Length: 246
Image (cartoon, rainbow, N blue to C red; front, top):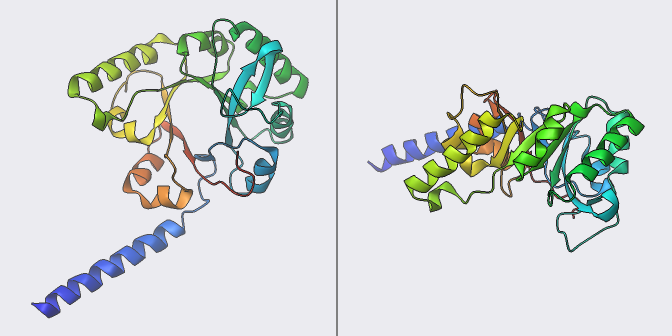
């Protein structure tokens, strides 16, 4: 019996080692799908661009149409979006996901005018950007004007909800998917299993992020492997702080 257990343990250890080696070989093989989360400094962009040519950036809209690169409205690093637009202009095959933290009826029109002007000034293709906000109705003018837009899903973890509450979230997202206001739904990976088979008949993409997961840990996770192979899931954001994280 003891010998049998030792054999089983050895087989399991060997299998785990083989899986780790397999996953290690996948690292940096999917730059079009695995993007860098929270790249809120140009130093971080330059530090990580060889691994992550496509990145996500947080934007707070300020008076006067200023697009302030910061995660929190009460914090500023006095970094505008201009250097990122230059980056896109130099690399037309690359993309930036703009997480707009405070889009509202009051700043929507000015934001679009400023963004349109930047696109024209730098010669950037609108398809190089993801414009994301939980205020999905306000994204329709951007979608209509050929920007790639996404509704930020703000629901709590499905595991913390009752079945009725989960069904209610799915129903609301179905309304978003059918509305034509946005091109995608973006959500934390813990919503993926719930949403995976939803809205198959709607022209809606999925974007996701792995909470606090590096690329290696995302690839080690069986859920990450499933997400990687889902053609409707276009982007997975992962963590990689580096030396210039904000």
